[in-house]
Length: 443
Image (tube, rainbow, N blue to C red):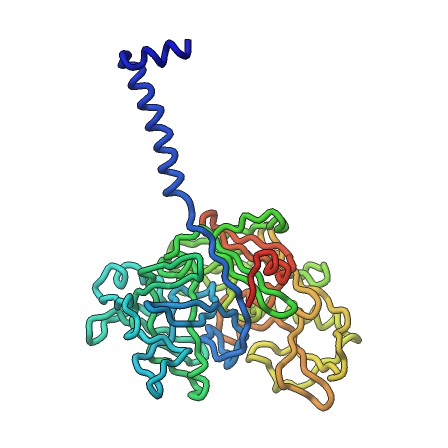
């Protein structure tokens, strides 16, 4: 029967049509799979660095997560702070050289043949910047001019432009929009030269990850040497611990204190050594102004809680460490302007005593902060023969921030997956130094 159909198909119009439809059906499947596939994943090493970085909070110095890559044609080296709390990626630009030598920390657009400034009346400048905190303007050359300001009184401004970003041996991305910032101001002029760029990774249309078109990205920060990795794309690894997912909270209507393109999750409660704290549910949800959202922010070092919640945590942690740690009795000392529960630890002490764990409970997931990560040693601060350690949670009210912010210090040894396609964040505890080895990522 099979040979009969084949031999007679040439003269049978019905079979011709049938075979043609079958062929077109499978061809369509192949075409769809090609166009629907995500870009190949890219893996970058992460390193931490204490520097004068742009801060949304009032910090003079911050430990930041740094990604190194090259931009332009020919490629120029740049370093960028990984920031899930910002949209616009930017680099420090300068069109001059020092002693006829290029500055390795500054991008020179004149030396890149693929650099293109964005006109202020272009669709990019008009339509894709609606979530910028400060709307862009036109400069004297009719170029799209962006200004970024931060709570620590620093600011940067420059023009939007596009150029080629080189992602190692994996490939190049041409036409990626970023800020070429040629004016950077801070309260400490000596620190300006240390300012690095920023890789904006929120859900805004001009963020790095949005322009790249990746459905998800992940990062992992080691708790031992503070190195890590950034994975753009799907991990597809079998050895990774199953992730617990928490959905993103989304509010479509504009509210004065709600960041619509941030990675906002629902904080349901806080535990100290497994004890659920008596926190009213009403203070954990955004109010009618949008104040009170909980943001996961890799660009901020520590975690900050609204005043009423912070005070409940502070009181319970103080009770559970009574007789274990010696409190720093100095009302004038508040680390980073928001962390006022500090302790004195003898300088010769190599290990801290067993500390209460602090768990942040989200919808469907939990982030457990334990061991030394619960406290943070204040660099260079001593009292006699004692070092100073502070609770690594701060009071956001003291910073004038109307939100809960989950910083990267509490994301150490945690696989953090940001799933843009399914609007959720996945997390699981993992040895990030071993994860780097498995991916073959070195510094």
